[in-house]
Every structure is written in structure tokens, then in C-alpha cells.
Image 1 (cartoon, rainbow, N blue to C red):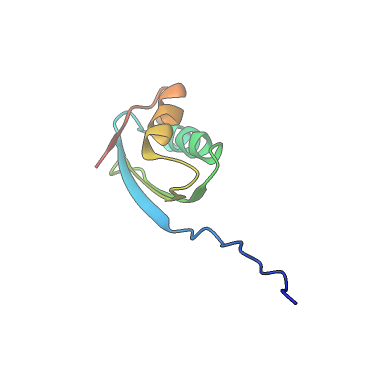
Image 2 (image 1 turned 90 degrees about the vertical axis):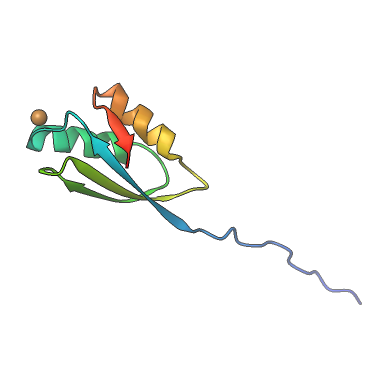
Amino acid sequence: MVGYICSFKKKKVINMTVKFNVVNMSCANCQKHVKHALEELSGIKDIEINLPAKEVVVDFDENQVTPNQMIDAMAEVNYQANII
Ligand SMILES: [Cu+2]
């Protein structure tokens, strides 16, 4: 008798990291806006923001979101981000 063989394979999740320079992020409010914009996206695992350096480091699942989508999300709330 042939049994049922489960052929599902779990998609391997590899967290990627991308670092942005957010040109016009200049105060705690900006930091909050940028963070919220990124949190709206699915696949975002972690967000670290260094305000004095204007740097944002994002850990993400590359199956769900791309750095370009993050740039667009930040642009929607008027922050200009570049990958560094
Ligand atoms: Cu500000």
C-alpha cells in the first residue's frame, strides 16, 4: 500500500539586511514617521534607526518585500532614502 507522502517544502526564509541613508530625517518625529512607514510593509523583521547618522537598517524577508518598496514607502511620507 502506498501511503500519502507529504511533499510540502517549507520555503526557506533568509533574512536580508539593507541599509539606507534617509537624507531629510532630522528629528525624533522624522524617525517615527520613517519607522511607521516601514512597519506598514509585510516582511519587515527589524528596523534600527541611527538618527544622528541618518541611517536606517532594515532586516527583511526577501520573499515578501524589496528595498525598492521600502524606498517607495518612505517617499510616500516625504522622506528620501538611498541604499548605502
Ligand atoms: Cu523631523
